[in-house]
Image (cartoon, rainbow, N blue to C red; front, top):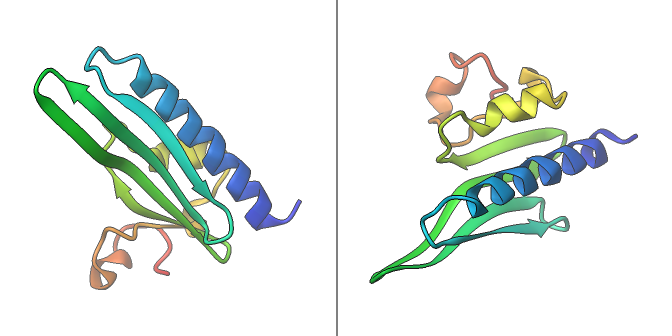
Length: 112
């Protein structure tokens, strides 16, 4: 299987699991997954009302650029990177996009 297709499948499965888990939380919000295969963008979107408070947030944003998975944003407790590695994506194929380019070389993950 082509690396990009394999990674796309892994990303979708992980984000579906995160959205399903978030949907069980008693906060009143719904979680949705947004997949844009053409542009390589994958999101979990939390949206809804909890009493008088409205939420529209993206707790996870991943990009598939070439043969690398870019973690653009991760607001999860355990970290989506752990899920990606457990699913078979090597550290060398994961870029911590939310880290400044100058410090990426010190993270143990791909630089770009």
